[in-house]
Image (tube, rainbow, N blue to C red; front, side, top):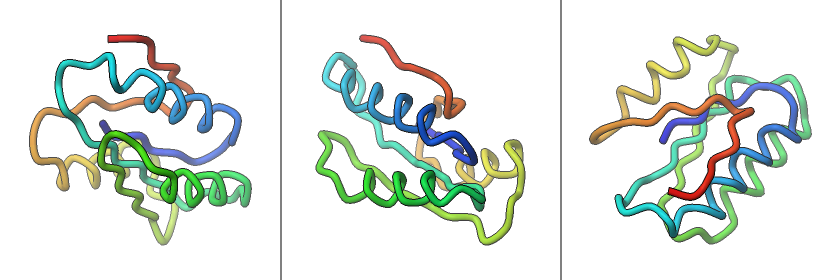
Length: 98
């Protein structure tokens, strides 16, 4: 899963926490790649750092862009790192079971 983040810590938190909450309901192992697209919001940067340090039942990688690349270029960065099929989530997505 690739989640590019930029603004709105509440949306980012809802998205990442929903992935964590429903990870066990998935039948396919996955890893989560969170890419901070040079967020201008300190709350977003701090949340992503804290999320990265929390234990999860799946691997988490956090990348940070040095400058804002925009959604498409940030997703492309994530796709280049992917090792298989990819699900791309907007940071305002709430994942449900399964």
